[in-house]
Image (cartoon, rainbow, N blue to C red; front, side):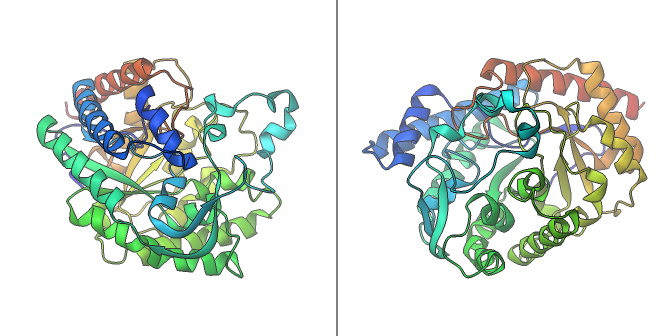
Length: 386
């Protein structure tokens, strides 16, 4: 991971809006309908090339492929692993509404956060998991390598779902227990993690389960039960990435990417100790939305290991408000005052395209937010490196 001793670098969580024509082809692929795979792969490569160029021009230092080839952060795995298959409908059987939405029932009919899940088939584990098809990952790596060679960003990262993420959001319908499923995902996902690292990209492990599942899938658990399970997921992540240096990895957590009340989100203060046990050097987390911006005080009060890098969200991923650069700078400086200016990057709360087809934030507004973040990082850099 390339840091800076001269200025605040900018990045984001990963997923970005897909072009409409690519979205249509991805949807067909997801539903198992006939699709021209040659055209799909060519359009994906073209989209990645343009997107990387757009990120660099908007002032993003550490870029990604925007997950252009993926229908979602989790179910993409069904194209790579054995044992994962679609359910009969769009929803996961037995999945409850988020706890906060239950408190405000008039919201139940509205697509959360701009929708998205209804556009794709839900996926479950229905057989033994193992990494079987390396071709999709190899195409993703080749596309991003080609795009970044042309655009010349400061650094590059690629997303991958953590074992705990898949155990939670691609639920188990095969193994005798959740623990056994998660254990098998360690070896199943290890080839993907190693391949991303070996090609020279920073590996980002996506772990929305470590916070977001508390008020959704595990809302009936006690907090102690939830934290004990989260620790198992961190242990699984650590085991699966044992071959990769911590400084080559970053880890993202969130409370799920939708504009809801979020009144039952578990406080980050209860999670920081666990998060610091994870091997990845950098931690990405929400720091811009109205429910979590105040938690910089909890990070300030915590004992953060000297080797950890913080990448707080300084722009919100669920609203079309474009943050003022001065506000972005204020948010950055709060965290620089906690761990030092060289251990902070500016990021986004979550992805802007968690599900392909989500329209919570319009594509042109996403780029406007990126430009505001870059300008704010410049202001913060001037303050921190006087």
